[in-house]
Image (cartoon, rainbow, N blue to C red; front, side, top):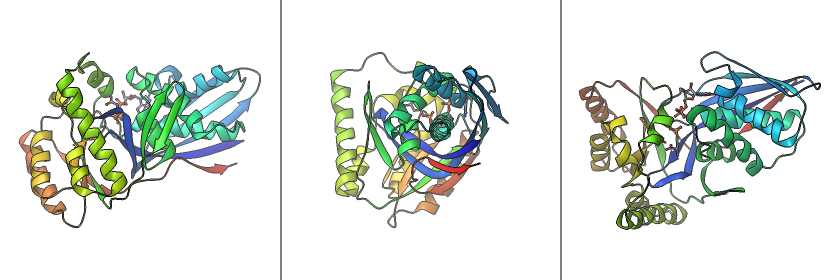
Length: 308
Ligand SMILES: Nc1ncnc2c1ncn2[C@@H]1O[C@H](COP(=O)(O)OP(=O)(O)O)[C@@H](O)[C@H]1O
Ligand SMILES: N[C@@H](CCOP(=O)(O)O)C(=O)O
């Protein structure tokens, strides 16, 4: 007996929404097949072509292990992780694997977990990849659309209503880095000034209200951050110039995708998106970075696809 689930890539943070906001997009997807091998013990195994196969080091395997332990389930589960999302690039790769793995096991064992309960376990998979159970990527890959994680204990996720028409452009460097998000999280300040807190709160409010109202100017003014992206700039030295040129060419908004180094551009019919791509290619080259460009759109949540 086996079940396959598909989960899409995501861009977390969305400027000042660190560890809270995220959006799922159709750029890439992972597939995880969970197979029940037996019921005599709690055992998880992972097969993956390009990510760690040690359960404790794989976001999919670790999430499932913690699920079985927490629920006290004896099951021998093998996971086949088919990676479609390049990792170490800020595309929620580790999170998508964990989301798909939890969804597949939920179906395989008839657990009837809610989407929030699935996020509760999937986020634990991020401990394997970054050392921290940040819930944003897995929330987007599980729920789909644009989401906010409003509580982590217990996990609460809300879909952000979006009335604004836009498409997505991802500017993706060719090379990611092992343990990138773990390193990026270590670069963050332990505290922020009252002034920066208020500025970021204004950004966050503008972004969410702008999406809900379909107000392009509010979204453009809200998709900003003065704390997290600033602290991590050494990881994406090309970002400031790319953002500047994209806004000059009338992008709806620009932010770092997750912990980077990919960049997310929201664009519409007013945007010179081809101009953004050609200018960004040159900017990236000037920093010794070869970038790929992926035009995409918002994605739905995790899909359970096959039961054999
Ligand atoms: N199933 C998985 N998919 C992707 N990366 C994984 C997975 N399991 C563990 N990892 C590890 O997590 C790191 C990539 O995750 P992360 O740094 O969060 O980047 P991103 O999520 O932006 O791809 C790599 O070191 C990779 O080896
Ligand atoms: N909130 C996290 C998001 C990490 O996203 P990823 O796609 O880069 O893994 C963080 O910024 O640390």
